[in-house]
Length: 287
Image (cartoon, rainbow, N blue to C red; front, side, top):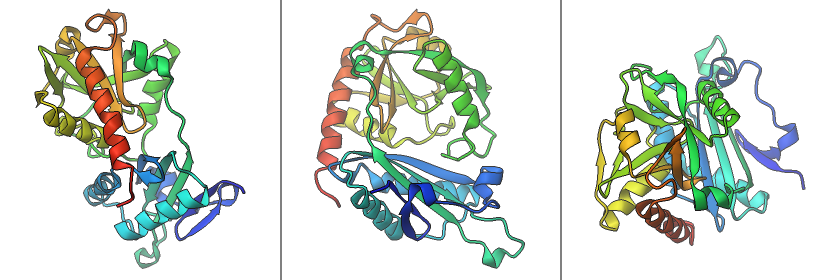
């Protein structure tokens, strides 16, 4: 059977799925997306993803016609149709076609699901190299802190990082504060304390970020959200990245500057182990 996607109100073959040439997401990037992971046929922290999706839609005036229950049902219908247990999912929601009559505008909902392809084991054993993004994040940009489909600047910075052998690039704000990676949230460890930029930096309120903050508290690790700079990065004993696909990714160097002992540190390794256990626990049974 051909790969299926869920488009608006039905399962369709991926090769036959089509959106309007007037879609606002296509023309103006007026849309939001979520990247999710499923294990054992259960989406990890789906409620958190939907919370973020609808919060972004409200903040940016992106209409989503479907409600949470409808989207949840669509996701699980899609996983079943594609016969997937462990999967990477992408949900895209836009304001739909730009028509002169607002009463006839309908949002676009597209969900895809493919086999989950993990990052290489070597990344976790040795840690990854991270580059500095040549671009800066503007806290006054209304789209920052939301997962919008206007993502090209992030992809461009990531492409530049890959070109120099780095796995990710970290962004700073125009004021010089550490923000986030192109596709990840950033954590530092110093003197046994886990540090991460506060959400109002602004940074994307990552689902994996939220899970790590919870797990740190559950396992007696002090965690602080505070303004951080390049000096904090250079002084860090450990550094790691998070998103729901990479989970907890250790960083061994920031460009040519070694982080700590140039290998994954003990707190990073502990949090990674606890994160893996947490994903397994959360994905045992569908809510």
